[in-house]
Amino acid sequence: MRRLLWIAGFVVVTVHWPGVAAFADQASYISRADAIRAGNRIDLDQEVRFFCQPCGDTQSESLTVDAIAVYYTGLDDYYSLYLNDFPVDLAYTYILHEGKWNNMAMLLELEVTDVPQILPDLPMVKREVDVP
View: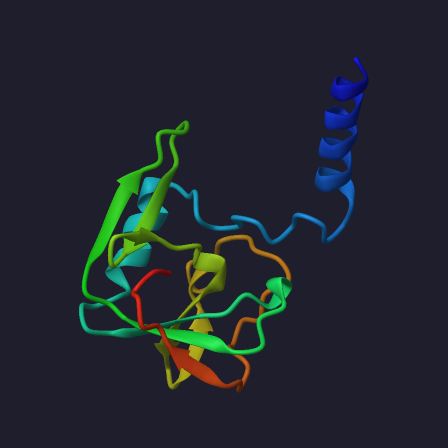
């Protein structure tokens, strides 16, 4: 019984304590239509960048897109966008739009929190292993 209460308490804290779990998987499980719209905004050989401000990132990461796909997550009616065979969270994905690195989730008008609309001017590293 004590273990069950601990688990229930953990769920209450992580769900209701502002900022604790707010940044986990904000826009990785999305509708099929949104995943397709996201995929249609990206071209092969295009550079995308990743940056998770709530995670404490101090630099962005760059990835050249070799493959784009939308897959069913196996959960309810949720799908995910895959870049180079790995799922991405659109809340931390940025694409070049009108000369600035824009947050993909915000471009699609998905609800996300604690992420900048425009990628801050930070050091950038190229991903050696294409794993978003």
